[in-house]
Length: 63
Image 1 (tube, helix red, strand yellow):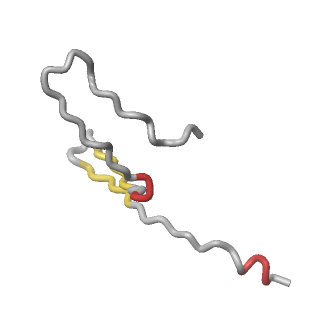
Image 2 (image 1 turned 90 degrees about the vertical axis):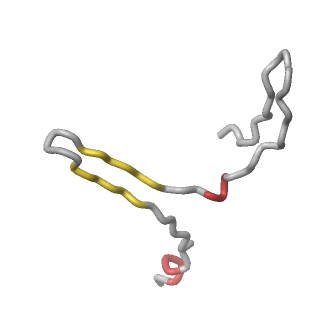
Protein backbone atom coordinates (compact mmCIF):
# COMPACT_ATOMS: atom_id res chain seq x y z
CA UNK A 1 0.00 0.00 0.00
CA UNK A 2 2.89 2.42 0.68
CA UNK A 3 4.93 1.34 -2.36
CA UNK A 4 4.02 4.42 -4.44
CA UNK A 5 5.06 6.73 -1.60
CA UNK A 6 8.46 5.03 -1.25
CA UNK A 7 9.30 5.35 -4.96
CA UNK A 8 9.71 9.14 -4.76
CA UNK A 9 12.51 11.10 -6.39
CA UNK A 10 15.46 11.43 -4.02
CA UNK A 11 17.14 14.51 -5.57
CA UNK A 12 19.12 16.32 -2.90
CA UNK A 13 20.63 19.79 -3.06
CA UNK A 14 23.58 20.99 -1.00
CA UNK A 15 23.51 24.44 0.57
CA UNK A 16 25.08 26.32 3.44
CA UNK A 17 23.80 29.10 5.71
CA UNK A 18 26.25 31.09 7.84
CA UNK A 19 25.55 33.63 10.58
CA UNK A 20 28.50 35.44 12.12
CA UNK A 21 28.26 38.05 14.86
CA UNK A 22 30.97 40.52 13.84
CA UNK A 23 30.21 42.86 16.74
CA UNK A 24 27.37 43.11 19.20
CA UNK A 25 25.40 45.29 16.77
CA UNK A 26 26.51 43.79 13.42
CA UNK A 27 25.65 40.35 12.07
CA UNK A 28 26.69 38.87 8.74
CA UNK A 29 24.21 36.42 7.17
CA UNK A 30 25.36 34.44 4.12
CA UNK A 31 23.67 31.75 2.07
CA UNK A 32 25.50 29.57 -0.43
CA UNK A 33 23.36 27.41 -2.69
CA UNK A 34 25.19 26.76 -5.97
CA UNK A 35 23.24 25.59 -9.00
CA UNK A 36 25.94 24.32 -11.33
CA UNK A 37 23.44 22.84 -13.77
CA UNK A 38 22.63 26.37 -14.98
CA UNK A 39 26.23 27.44 -15.66
CA UNK A 40 26.95 28.19 -19.30
CA UNK A 41 29.70 30.41 -20.64
CA UNK A 42 29.11 33.15 -23.21
CA UNK A 43 30.87 32.99 -26.55
CA UNK A 44 34.06 35.04 -26.61
CA UNK A 45 33.82 38.42 -28.31
CA UNK A 46 36.54 40.97 -28.98
CA UNK A 47 35.74 44.52 -27.81
CA UNK A 48 38.27 46.88 -29.40
CA UNK A 49 37.30 50.27 -30.87
CA UNK A 50 33.60 49.36 -31.17
CA UNK A 51 30.94 52.03 -31.54
CA UNK A 52 28.28 49.83 -29.94
CA UNK A 53 28.32 47.66 -26.83
CA UNK A 54 28.60 43.90 -27.06
CA UNK A 55 25.44 41.83 -27.38
CA UNK A 56 25.07 38.51 -25.59
CA UNK A 57 21.84 36.63 -26.41
CA UNK A 58 19.75 35.43 -23.47
CA UNK A 59 20.27 31.70 -22.89
CA UNK A 60 17.97 31.26 -19.89
CA UNK A 61 14.39 30.14 -20.54
CA UNK A 62 11.64 32.59 -19.74
CA UNK A 63 9.84 30.88 -16.86
